[in-house]
Image 1 (cartoon, rainbow, N blue to C red):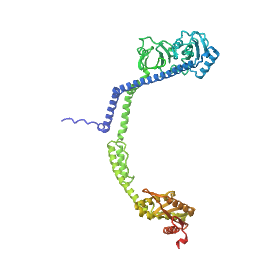
Image 2 (cartoon, rainbow, N blue to C red):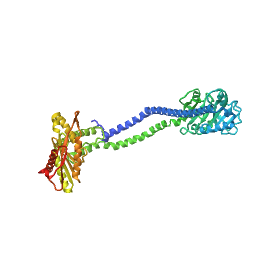
Image 3 (cartoon, helix red, strand yellow):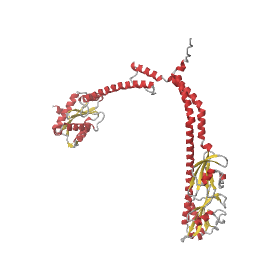
Image 4 (cartoon, helix red, strand yellow):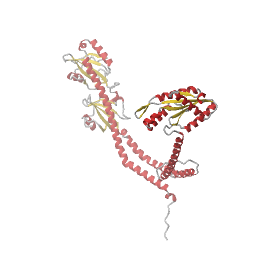
Length: 552
């Protein structure tokens, strides 16, 4: 007799367990996929982003330096052209001229000086620096360059012979009217002065990075974030291959190892006005730190993610079918009349959501029919109380509102006025232009009578060319009625434009005033009607108030 097959406990056969097992497998697959495929792609993107950022920084600093150097070269060239040669023989005037121009545009923070054409001394300087006037400038590179060129020249960065400070000198020849060089004007700029190269010397990139400003012509570090490297010679060829490429003209981004053995991400950007280039460098350990952090984060959080997933699924799955239970409970309450018929919320687009969507579709169809029925009832009610041509209240609605106004008048002691309006000259329009034109005129008449009325007033059409205006809750009904009647007569006096026709109409208005004890609606309408006929007998286009004589 064969042994019965071993049956798994019921929990391992449930949908909850299967979904948990599927979720665990999915997480494990996701972790492996990120480690094997996604992470290498992210590493490459981070490297590219860091390189682009480093290049952008280097380019910005290089452009900033180029602008500052260019401004100073342009200034020294301008000063050379503006310096009066007559001042070279009048030293007080020359010194005052230098002082004034230094104060106007102090780009050369260590001052301006004018060197004799033979280079044996200064003709003038501002401000005065001890020891500078006695120096011999004949062999100075900037002096020789200024003598050989018509353009401003820039010398080699060096420490000043008079002060010992790191500086650079820019010079231009001063020529007389014959074009002969009679002197050289020079500006001295300290490298570490604010507004010049201090951006390089005082700014660092990250915690371990910084800048270098290199002159390939002079094989010299002009400026650097590390003060010890300022005015030091560049490495000899062969020591740093990437540096050798940069000295030969390479501009871009690469990885190199500095003299201290630290691997750096370096970006090289040119300073066109000087032939220099800027190096923005950052240790690769710092530049690519997000890659290492990301790898450690993926690995260290894998188990945590798995545990959290298990906890969430154990909490969520037992509640997975709760919407279906709640929907069944709500359906029963609707069937019992404990809550109105309405659509149920759909939280998920699964099988449960499909059931709820089907129920909501059924409810929507029922509600559509109910709304259509209500709309039809509302339309019928409107048609029963309004004129179909002008949409104004008809006689039935007017009489209802008039009864309410009479009741308020009796209760509160207020006054009301009833204006019975009959068009003058409407029949000829109907006969000559047709009923369609006449209907359009009647619509415009209704609009003009409505214009300016209060919310408590009623403008109604009794039929044909007869209109009634009810003015309720008045204190001085006689004055108010006269004012409204005059407004209506003025409005009707304006031509009516219908189908390119300009038509003229008039109106006769009869007014009945009431206050105090209630009277019959038909009685008040009759009074206003009588007054209207009195207005017509008086010549049409008029208004008339009801008096007892009108009823005789």
